[in-house]
Image 1 (cartoon, rainbow, N blue to C red):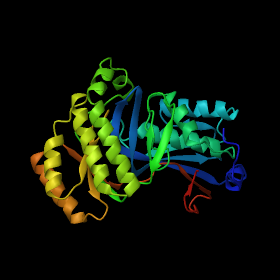
Image 2: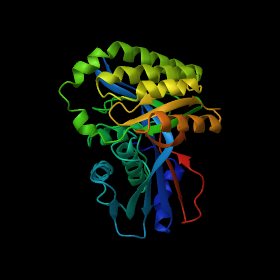
Image 3: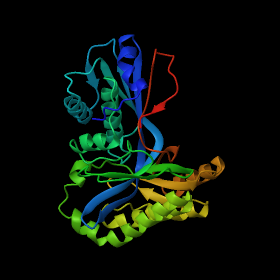
Image 4: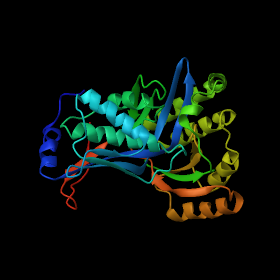
Length: 321
């Protein structure tokens, strides 16, 4: 545990005792910018978007975790880490992220809930601590890690923040169905397919890192597209090439995918006109009617944020770390 808590963390238990509500948010994702195996390390690079899971702690209600079994398990592990027996109130998860699509619904829920549990006792979890807790439940996304991050999503052994994202808008489409992340990562042929695409994944990583270092959206789009195509041998998305062709005609910089999910994201430079995206939506409805449009969100920095106050009187979000 990180014991170097700032004054605002240490004051949270007093605020809760006075009837304040604690709220923590963590972004979801549109798949990943890349994912694969390099040397002996399975990893992914996150693609956090401005669509958030929230954990809301109401101290006036009986202790409970109102979330799925994965979130409940992660909170119990957090309490063990903290040396506490129960949550000081009702912890509710609120999210619009769909399940089984590759939008990091479980990871965002777990990240928000675990951080809320720590903050309730005047402490905070470092990103690596959340990553360790999350991967003890299932393979995870690193949306609770700051910036755009490279993480060991299966073992949780390490993460590295690669930098803040340039201005990029992501239009998210869904091909339908669901993918069980845990079963996907248990596939026996996984290593063989990942070895086959390792060279291209290395190239994708180089492009993405260059884009972050230079704050140039083009390189993130190019790297994401390399990785999306390479992943076709592992989890094919039949609509990928036509979607990219249509998007390219309207000025998009790439298409990324959920490497173990069902969504595809068209990546645009941040100053894209809303009309341009609307025109592409119409083309996709006409030529790829099997795809469902889920929405437009900006690429954002990952991490966790909190606010604490009386209901209806919440202040601005404060970033943890």
